[in-house]
Length: 360
Image (cartoon, rainbow, N blue to C red; front, side):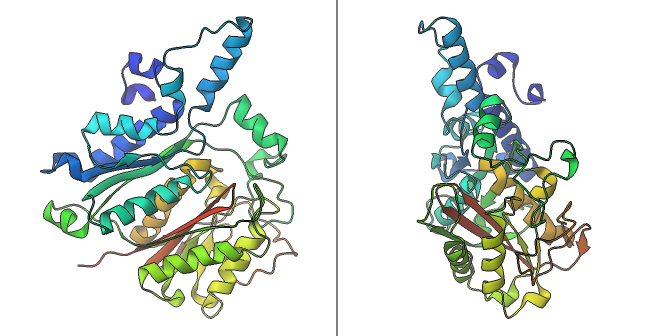
């Protein structure tokens, strides 16, 4: 409900993706209590992702243009509603956060890149805190039509409740979702000094490129493997210390096999203790926002001691040699000390982030 966060005039001037972003960021800022702290506004940044930006706005304006028989009667809000960086800018305006501010755009890896960038900015000492996340609003004729035309979406329309089924032999594409997620990241000293509730420690990030194909992942998952390996190296840990991996797991025929192969290669000596799952089976695929909501799910798996399940997967594809626990059907209680979240985007852009249970 945008009226919880915005006035009616603001709602009319903002694309739905920006409305989602502002709502999620508002929740994160309020929940974290960071706005009540004594802050240097130039030391608080906003890095907020979107894979597409204001797609609904662009569609509406082009339709109106056609109805006007090509006469250029565009809204003065067109550009600011459409551009993919506007969410970051407006979040900063609302909260007077004057530090580093930009949007990351790397398709379905966008929000994980935002989180990774925020992590690095804080480590470099350039900011004390960052509101990081991602937002997307693609459930409209252009978004659905575009992904459908490249056969990325599931066609399981008669039984849509189970259409998102990663690793299942009958999977045929992803289910499009929309929304936003936001996290407040800050240096440990800054968090302790203001008495923040610390949900987890972000300890590593890894980024790579497939350098292979515009939409298809490399079939051997070579760069997916390296993104995860770089994150583990950055975190200063070993694979056997990871308890859980939130998979990208989109439920596409081409995407699922290389990821599971890369995971099993990296964790081959400790597969018996590792749990993985694909939460997109429950949320659908939020594109540029996926990494944000999945990072939150990963953090909460650490806090709550619960591995979220992969639902809808009834029969694992025999073409995929699965040696790891996919956490099928039901959540599992487990003491999760270290967890990883993966996201990969069109263009072959890969990102992985690692969180650890915080202990004083």
